[in-house]
Every structure is written in structure tokens, then in C-alpha cells.
Image: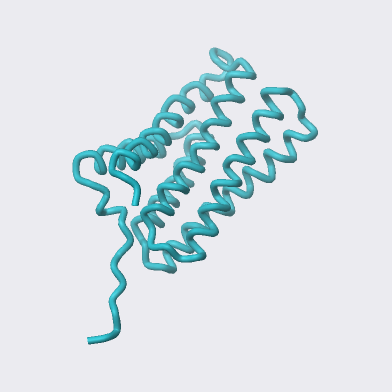
Length: 176
């Protein structure tokens, strides 16, 4: 298990990247130099790799959860690299393909991770993943900053109350 401070850093990283990125990207023409926007959005996508690590560290280790968390992390990094190549380096042919694979892989992976967690009765973590997915869509459509608010809240909760609510439930043994 990672330390409390490690969990807080990951939650703060995810929250901060999205809290900074949402207003910058939604500012449109007032602030949107292509390179800066590409770096910002790529960092936002890559933050899901850190989120996947936090989930896998707190979850009861099951192959489906570990596999889907790794898939989410790889898809997030692939999408981030693809976006940077496409928009930051202006290599649209290669970049758009890599970005598309990563972004849609990330969406699929977050849904699959939610299902894997729910099937293992790790409801709090499943809700956290689906909340992050919904928050990503809201942020990208110019809506509420649900994702950074949720992750700042998680960081504060872990800092002051401990990470217990993120822990996987204990399995009951069938022996008396």
C-alpha cells in the first residue's frame, strides 16, 4: 500500500491538472495558443494514468482490475502523446490516429474499470472512476468542473481522515 502522502499527491495532481486545464481550454481565443493548449490537454489526459495507479493501489488485487487499470493508464498516455503530436507538433496524420486510439481506449478502459470494480464489490472505487469519466465529459463540453472538485475532495479526505474509505472491502471467509 502506498503512503497517505503518496495518495494525496496523486489526487492533488489529477485535480490540479484539470482545475488549471479546464479554464485555459474553455477560454477559447482569449487563451489558446496551439502549443500551450496541446500541452495542457495532453497533461489532462495523462493524469488518468496516475488515477489508474491510485485505483489499483487501493483496490483488492484482482486480475480484471489490474488489467483494466493498466489499460486505462496506457490509453491515457497514448492519447496524451497522440494529442501532443497532432496539435503541438502539427503532425496530424500520425497524431490523430494515435490520439484517437488513446482517447477512445481511455473511454472504453474507464467503463471497463468501473465494471471490473463493481463486479468485485468495490463500489466506492467504481463510483470514483465513473465520476471521473462523467467529469471529463462535463469539463470538455464547458460544463461544471466536477472532476477537479471530486479529486480535491478526495485529497482533502485522505489528508485529514485517511484513505480508509478508498480501501477494498474485506472478503468474508466461508469457514467458521
